[in-house]
Image (cartoon, rainbow, N blue to C red; front, side, top):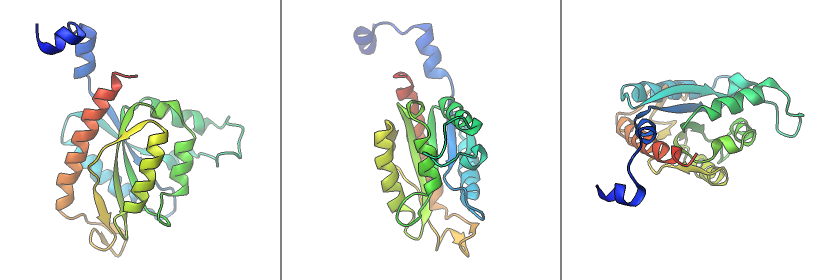
Length: 199
């Protein structure tokens, strides 16, 4: 009997299934405004992710859920329930984050606040963009993650509006970002798998 088995007991068939089952990772688009470029970035991340074969990856666009502003509703809009159901089906997240006034968009904060327990004990990575790579928005988002019991991974691809976009609208990422995205995904998959055992 190995060291781990001595401490935790022999692994059951159920445990084996849990560790070999593919995870579901949502790539969340953090903007809803007209002319947004987050879909370009999200599709780029998804293209890299799907070549890995280590999880199921899908784009989750908060614009599709037509969420009202928190505090202006009785909570019965169908988009609220659909949003929570979608989050409940996911094991981890990649947030595509653009910087607005040194923080995240109001639409993303609103969407995060419309859910609670479905965030708990899951992992997330951040791909951000802006004039300073979206770094300040990402730091704000990490604080929000802590309150929602989301474990954010260290590796953080930062995209510059000056070097990774043409005229600020057409996404043309530099080669160096590919390795960063893969490293981030390694961490998200590892942490999501570990945290799944807590749920």
